[in-house]
Every structure is written in structure tokens, then in C-alpha cells.
Image 1 (cartoon, rainbow, N blue to C red):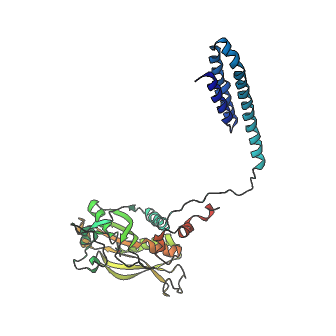
Image 2 (cartoon, rainbow, N blue to C red):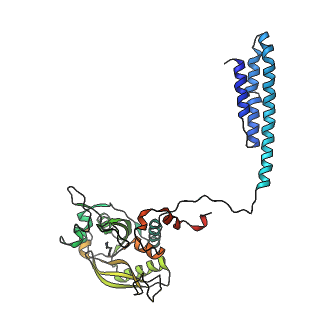
Image 3 (tube, rainbow, N blue to C red):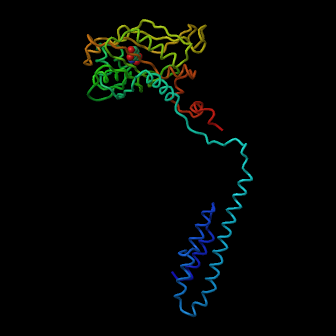
Length: 345
Ligand code: DAH
């Protein structure tokens, strides 16, 4: 590049230079006019130029130096000017403008609350596959071969050999945990489950469950009741109470359905509790000795309890959202309501 071209390109650079802080202005001075600066270096090169050429270029060189100096003064002044201006327009009493943030899905929030409640009494989290084999989803859990839950109507079967299906409940994880661990076992399994149901406000073909399992020597029904009471009060408040109704599950004996006093009306009855004052929140029972044996745990030595709940059901009671479909539509107008209000501008 000829000296003239170098002068021109440096002048362009000068015009474009910016400085937002005093430091940046100083860096500009060093880069241009410092001992090894670009302008200084050009003067070194200029020394080598032949006599008559020197005269022609000398004026341009001096102009360049003056421009560099002037620009530096400008940048310094601009910086100071800006600092003063910023100081004068800051209104420290004005509320901050906060960009809208995303939020966790309501089901994620409730699942986390459930995990926290169980974690406080020593339950770990276990997970299992959503595509499950017949053994873990049904057989080991004591479902007789002709049990209606295996029916094509309820279960999404996976094509091909091996009898795989989308798990219909998280009880399958119980089996996996018991097969792989020795008691004492204290674990919960949150996860997605699938059922071949027509989608409506009250049913969906996929939803979330949390299963809990406690197996040790001498685990009693009283401990199950205590855990249920602790769970309901921790999640819904100290004023709620629970009641158990005898029920049937293939994998527990005895089995019960757990009702909680209605958190919406507090007792007298409303349409959420169908005017009974009670809402069903989960199923539970003592692990059937046959299930323990199926999983390699000696039922003569150990006993356990299990419970399973629907996360959407719990979320409905906490957030009072009556239509299950809303949890899957991902309409931001719905999801946005679970953003902490104080984060919104
Ligand atoms: N697996 C049951 C269901 O999907 C829920 C359940 C009931 C789980 C009782 C349990 C239990 O562990 O003890 O309907």
C-alpha cells in the first residue's frame, strides 16, 4: 500500500473511532499517537521517502496528525459530555423496566412442590422408562392376565415383539426400584403416563403421576396414614384433613382411596367437591406381599406402603383450573399466569 493510501485509510479509521469511556479515549490516543501508534509509525515510514516525494506528502502527513489529535480531543470531550448528560437524565425514583421473563409450566411447578414435600422426609427421586414392558407395568404388579387395565381400550401398545406399551402408571417404577435395591427403600417416581382415553375437560390421554414407595422392616398402615396427613397439610395447609375409603388395586392390600377436605369451599360443598366437602387426591395401600416377592424382596421380613397421585389433579386443586386440556395447549396467555407477578413490568 502506498503511503498516500495508508494516510487515507487511517483518516477513515479516525472518523469512525468511538469512545464510550475515558479509558477508551485513552486507548485511541495510544493506538494512534502513542510511541508505537499507527500515526507515529507512518511518520517513521515517511522518513524513508525520497526528497521530492517528501515535500508533496509532508502536508498530508501533518494534516493526518492534526486530525488524529483533534479526534482524540473530541472523543475525550464526548465522553465527559455524555457522562454529564447521563447524570442529569437519571431519575432514580422511576420504576425499573423489567423484560418479561418466561415461566415454568404449572405442572412442573406442582411436581417440584410434591418432590420437595417428600424430600423433607427422606424420599429420593427415581425414574423409569415411558415405554415399558408388560412385566414392569402389569405382571410384577399382580395384574391378572385378564385384568381390564390391560385392555386395548386403556393401553397404548407399541407395535412389534416384546409386548411393550406406553406405561399406564408410574407404579412400574416401583417394580424397577425394588428389583434393583435392597430395603430400606424410600423413593418417589414422578413422570408421564399414557392412557387411551378420549380427550375432554376431565380426561386426557397423557398426564403426570407421582408414585411413592416405602419398604422396610415393620412398615405399618399407621405410617402410611401419617405420611398422607403430612403430605396433604404440607401442600395444602394445616387446616386440611384427610380420610381413607377402602378401595382395590391389584398391587396393594389393603388399598384405599385418599380424600382431602375440599380446599375450595372448606367443607360445606361446592361444584368442585360435588357438594360432598371432600375431593379425591390419590390411591394408596400396603404393598401386596406377592408384589414384594415378585421383585425379590422377602415379604416375611419386609413390608411397605405405596401411593400414587395425578399431578394435574393436584394442580387443579391448587390453581383451580378446571379444564385438563389447558395444561397441554401451551397457550402463552394461560402459561403467563404462572409467572411470578412481581417480575412483570
Ligand atoms: N397406579 C394407580 C393408578 O394409576 C395409582 C396408585 C394407587 C398407585 C395405589 C399406588 C397405589 O402406588 O398404592 O391409578
